[in-house]
Structures are given as C-alpha cells and as structure tokens.
Length: 98
Image (cartoon, rainbow, N blue to C red; front, side):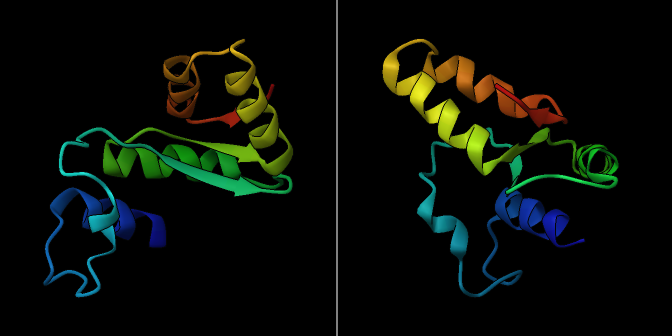
C-alpha cells in the first residue's frame, strides 16, 4: 500500500529508502503527523482503508472532500475554529464533514 510507504519513509527519513528525500520539506521539529485522503467524494470501503493504514502504521488519519477542505479553511480563517481544533479533526480515522 503506497500510503504505508510514505508514512514509513517520513518516520525514518532515510535517504536509502528514497533518494529524493521528499520529507525534507518538513521541519525537523515536526514529530507528529497524520495522513489524509482528499477527493471530490468518497465511495466504497474508504473507511476500511483508513482503519487499515492507521492500524498498520500506528498513525491516525482522515478523509476530507475538496468542498469540506475549503469549508474547514474558511472556519479557520474566520476564527470560528482554532488551528489546533482543525488539526485534531485529522485524527478521527473517518471522513471529516463540516
């Protein structure tokens, strides 16, 4: 599963795993991260995939539609939702719906 590979590469940050070192865009001080699926909409067994990735990687994640991602950004920008509260939504292992 591709997502598991990305999580592992980010956790280890070893050039031998991936010579392009894509994880260097993150500050070294970032020690906690989540994963997220972004799509126009979700069908099928996406919840099963979220749970599987979380269980196998010990990393929580979420799914969010492009519409809900824009709504989330507006909630943060308007001050109705704090940055910390927004980040917490990405630990639900479910779809984020506003």
